[in-house]
Amino acid sequence: MKPLLSEDHDGATLQNLGRASLQIIHDIKNQLNGLKLYATYLRKRLEKSEQDSELQETVAKLIGGLDRAANDLNVLVHYGRPLSLNKQQGVDIQKLMRGVSTNWVETASGDGECPLVVDSDAAALIGEFDATALTDAFKAISVGAWKTCTRDNPEALKVSLKRDVVKATPVALIEWGPVNFTNGDPFRSFNGSEAIRMSLAAKIIEAHGGSAEHENRLLRVHLPLTDS
Image 1: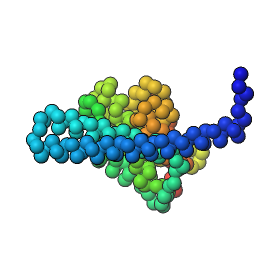
Image 2: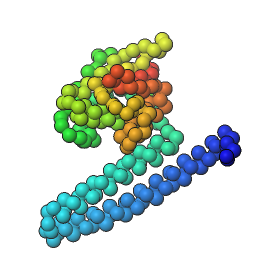
Image 3: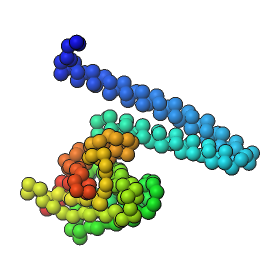
Image 4: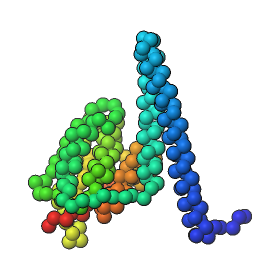
């Protein structure tokens, strides 16, 4: 039997594996970009020559698949790297979520219809946040939650925003529901590309001093506020 590795040796091995994995992901992305370039060229040739519409549709699906694969690899790269946040004072969480609810359909995909309803308190939810990173996190959570409701039933997905207090500290409480994740905690399952996006969203929220959890058909996020 081989001897167990020391913690230092094991940690160094994992770090080396992580760096190697990121490099491999970059190489695969470059190959996908090359394939997409050729496929795009082929599509243009088919359009000019008015070739079979089914063939054009097949090439379009190929390009779409390459785009999705490249986007999934981007998520892996972002998750594997340390977060670098550009926090600014006076960021309004309600405004960020309203922007997500306005544009979320462009990102979401799936079968069926599931309306997104945002219910927000009148009280302000102001804090020191990276608006871009937090918007991406809210978008990933909203899309992930929406996909579960379209698979089960057309029940509206409700996003609730309100003020709360945790250990005498004012926080924003954001909840998505009802949801139905069958593979455990979506913020920590890593079960597929969507789960990795959700895990990255949780990582962004935690980097802001907040928390993300899944409980009783709800996705719940707490974020610290700077206004009293």
